[in-house]
Length: 208
Image 1 (tube, one colour):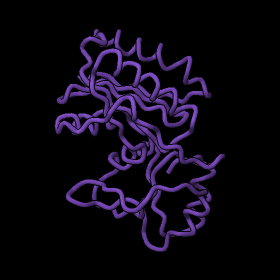
Image 2: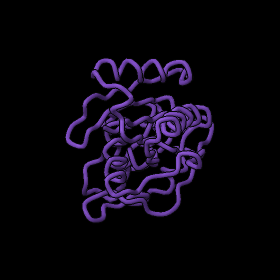
Image 3: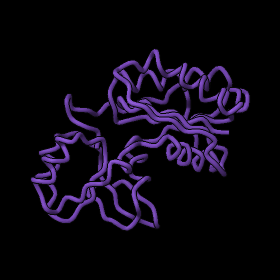
């Protein structure tokens, strides 16, 4: 059983995955209450599924890019569990979670469909919605945490921007779980003590 935790931004997610099915998944938007909400939410998730932490054999965690405070809460909890219970931990890029949820077959500026999966192209960097729109010169699929204002501005900026449905812009913790599970099965795990988050965020801009 793998437990996935994503606290990259105000959008928080938890999932339980056993390799064949999602036992449970939950997401919610917090008002910077990660510290007080995460542990009770995890307890509730486990109780509803009749699962104890003794049944969890691996941990998947989103490592960013994201905000400092939110990532620190998630990573601290995961590291504590991993070190106390001696279970492997797998860190997954926050952007990889978003990309993996998108329908395959559309070329993206930062991700391209190679071997039937989304693979990152080039370094991750921060910027504003307007800066991103200015760089798009050919049909490009854009997904991420976008406000209604962001969507309006991007739609007006370029005819080449294909905005993902809000349904595909939620970072599903079950996708984080599936990505982490695949790495775990290949013995590709991270060192819990040295695993560090990626802080790459411009104040007032979304994670794309």
